[in-house]
Length: 365
Ligand code: NAD
Ligand code: IPM
Ligand code: MN
Image (tube, rainbow, N blue to C red; front, side):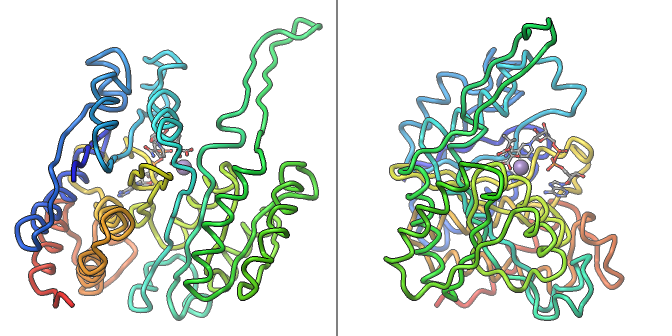
């Protein structure tokens, strides 16, 4: 299989380097067949080639079976060096999602019981750790609706952007969420805002039609604002959550907060024909180049890739086991280590080495 690797900006290349060590290890020891092709993507690609998603990268991605992507983007002040329409979030990430129609974004939120002290929430709230998956619609809604900017009849600058969904877009992501819920504990939380947004009214109508196909799954409907509170007060009630694009962007970063760091948030962006894998977080300009970023999110994205796009479930489980055993032994990067009293704080690279050592001990069954 061909794997396009887009390392991205900021901490992207640092965490990707550790992820590639894991891939190399699996290629050599587990007979995994992967040909890696690197391609420029993000702000760095804009400065070098004039576009954050250059044609050569599009070609490499088109010809690859899977894409592995690091975070892209610049700090608030540096991003102004790039014209708005060519900033990498719009012209690279959204373009990538649209090109491959990667409509279902899986964002697992996981802390094992042994790691639950890493959460800022009290032990009494999350005694058994945290384990749920957010399914976020990824190619519709406000992100991809019509946008206009101009002056209104009073001469005032105004902007208009529309939140658009059709029933097919809604049904296919809900179907993925029901299917996942069916395979897990058969509980689905539908996150919506139907008390205000018509888009949520349609979303919920379709959900009510679709749930007839999944009689074993119990659905809880929760307004998105209430869900934000519930994530803090009682996150253990969740198993599978499903929501539209914008809600999912915000709530999944909140989920990163309740497990202690965005560095623990891998993700899978699944399309019908092609999928790509990326951390949920950004390029972390505040810590770039210090060798302190947490590569868990990038390595976890590989575990998701092995399972969801390569049918290598055993290797996927091995990677998760290795990641968790490193952390459970107390080796943590600075994002998590500063709040853990008995931790050994390790660099990005050292964390990668610990994961490889741990992979060497995995019982591959
Ligand atoms: P961010 O996610 O980059 O960082 C938020 C905070 O989390 C920072 O304090 C950062 O240091 C920390 N953090 C994130 N990942 C970490 C990791 N792996 N290890 C340790 N700490 C980590 O969000 P931001 O600062 O708001 O955005 C920075 C840039 O990233 C912006 O240009 C934004 O548009 C972009 N962005 C890109 C993606 C993507 O490529 N998918 C996602 C989100 C944001
Ligand atoms: C994410 C990011 C992206 C989003 C941005 C950078 C386009 O925040 O993947 O969560 O909003 O989807
Ligand atoms: Mn986000």
